[in-house]
Image (cartoon, rainbow over all chains, first blue to last red; front, top):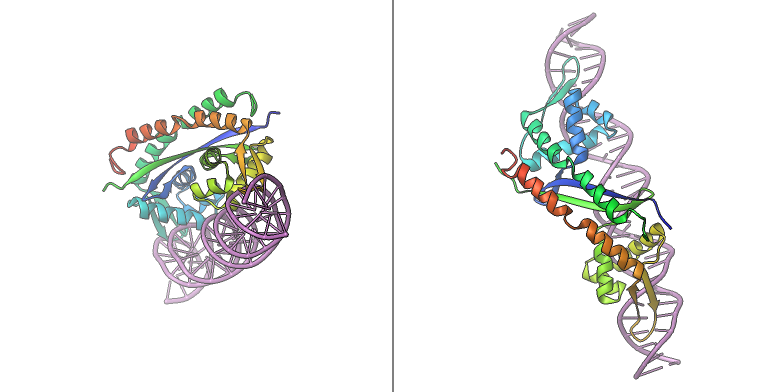
Length: 118
Length: 118
DNA sequence: TTCTCGTTATGACAGGATTGCATAACGAGA
DNA sequence: TCTCGTTATGCAATCCTGTCATAACGAGAA
């Protein structure tokens, strides 16, 4: 019998054994860049503001670099933008991720292509 | 400043969107093969018997194949051995995993080799 | 000056998932 | 019949994760 098997892959970056950056955080930073707001970005990628905030805090602490410039108050309530360091980091991470999934998928098809019992 | 960053990668197999097999379960099956006992295997890889048992149950249910032959009782209390299907599956998974990590590590070194700010 | 508004910033709590403890069942050999 | 180490499983406790509520903020409008 052949089940509907799929291979999944994931890469992330750790500092001192603690996860610091992965696909989710990448989406978050990208969304902040687009919207200029943590709150809007969180809504966009379907996580709570609380969680987005925790992510950013942890990333900045562990990487030791400032990723997001925030300001509160003002007519529009405030906002947030990416620092240059964040953009640079993001670009590199995108390069790292690129292609990995394709490699994994291809390998999986080669080996498990015919199902569990093939 | 250069932090001690590491890239981590993980691959696993899903059936119907539920995780079925990954590195931990691979270690478990390999240990069962070595020791002829779920209990010993669990001890070896530092998980509780309870957890090992849950893993096996879930794997068998989701993959739809029997992975472990168990027998209870007897002078030595019982034991467990891998089925041929389990060995075959294991071999394939090892092939799948092999090399992936190297590819990821190499890519990481190329891109982040000089540290966060490099 | 005072008020408004949407955002950032956190603490507190709830619900779910995970882990681990306790205990039963088992059966070959002494 | 008794022992022993293993498989098997319910259940309680613990740990995470996500959610809710609420404060602080400050530029511009009134």
